[in-house]
Length: 455
Image (tube, rainbow, N blue to C red; front, side, top):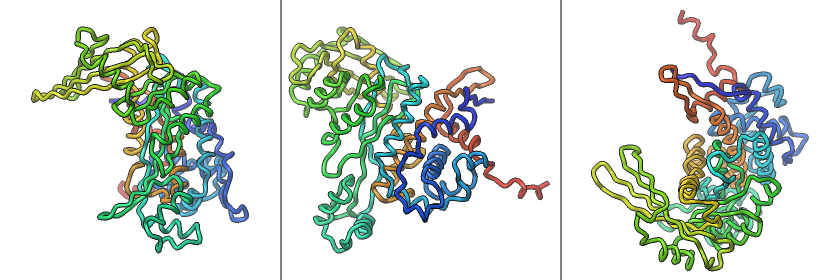
């Protein structure tokens, strides 16, 4: 039998509510006309975070949670009655996402002060920045939104006119005009994940403007991230994939005394060519690190080579080039070989080949831990958007979702599953921590008196 043990205050509602209080959601400006307000905005936002932390995937689930909350928590949130899904859905598009972003920062800084986000997996406090598709909005819905919030008739706009209007009215929607299939808009963001900590918390989210791509927004994203955490030691090192790696990024980071490790490919030009020329033909006996192991019936081998940079070719602070080779041998004998190249500002005395491999593999925690969880647990990437179809509302829900995600991530870190047979301990699954959050914040979901007749 397995026993779920949560250390300290996270075993009760106290730890969850304390982390919601850290975000200071009461400070978010209420956009509603006050004479018509029934529920305080802070109460609605706190309810939303609890609902998300207990697995809510829609505004209807938020309505259910408003009925299921323990009376003490309802009183603490100042919720005197049930919150309808329609009332909650109407307020989402009117929220200012930048204020919720600051709430996320307050939560992260409070957890940092508790030392639950300190680097435990890597030698530096490291942030990985990666792009994420949040929602796909059908063309008819975009036209309806334009009709509601402007004097234009969205249904009569040509696709070219609609694209122009979107740029001014809904700037964070990327328009995809498809002739043979239905056109749609995408809402995308950069998310920054603290990959050096066990919790892997998401510490920032910044929207990507519709007229550009990840590379066109990454400088803005980085500047906003560094401004938010500039007085802390949370961002000591930044990792980026090749789609976001530029010389400008290297310059910005070095001017802010932040180190970097960036993946590089042929679009990065001379620095990538230097990496290929110096490292591509290096034999295995000259590698700094070789690791081989079995996983899912496959044999996987990582080999790492490094090379000191004498000419940074305009990449300010570049000190080393790194090549990571990954060889996968399937059970049927098929072999897959992949090579990736990186540039880093850390010298050999700060980042040896062992640490380089840890860092390269840790970067993908932003995808495997953060993006995957948002999609699998909350269906963030679902074609339909059950929370709201308005781009501003989608950004707001995304930030509330990350506040809930961080609560659950810390809860997983401070929790252990102990098996009474072999005494082994390991982290609970996401489903387990969600069930624990549901247990400590809500009353039983079933009315047990209805089962009395069975006796």
